[in-house]
Image (tube, helix red, strand yellow):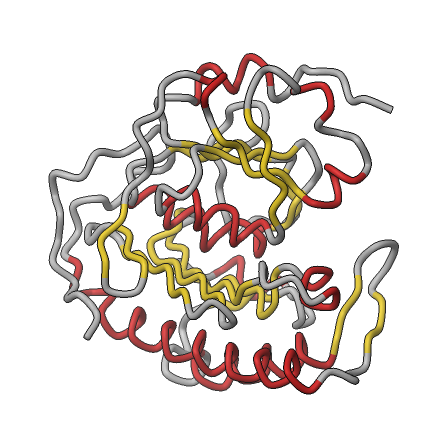
Length: 289
């Protein structure tokens, strides 16, 4: 059985959005239950494609593949979440966007398969990512790795969990001793060579999965200077906030969701204790050839 949604009003917060932190948890109970159900349904689809192989792979642009698994998982999530909440907006990587969501206070933000490149390569570091934002603030997040059967989930005021266990960010305070999760693609391009000696770099797939691992205390931080979309980040942001961490854009600014332009200028997510130190190096260290 999963832990009940018991409010933790004493949970420490980072500098990320705090709006509504003391609101009653029960106003998200139904949303959380259905988000978990949708994540599992999408996860079953992804696991099936993963095992069978031979699926169709297309492209949405340079270095941006899409598979039949992405699209089918998106349809499954949409079927479970849209009808029960007709007043909520919708933003998904695999659904054509429109401005209707900008009029909604609450918006589902979804990536049915974050880490498509890892999925294609057979690396089990991808995830279903589902978030609910309210007035631009992430109040619910579910990130599910269907191969490792890891369900990371959080809702406003109830903390962050991995399956049935309550989790929190680490307490590491020294950057040189910190484990920082890096993009596999960025690492392969040599973009992390400039950080040698400053921190321990661990290449890992999927932005959403990296954020979940930081929230669960499996690593101390992650950051990227590459542009990311809201659907890459929203579920992880909810997890990080409820786990006591901090998430900002690469320049240290608060991230607001459900914007007309869904692209964000990089990000830094960590255990809060490391944020000031990361802000001094992450945006500025020269990229290496």
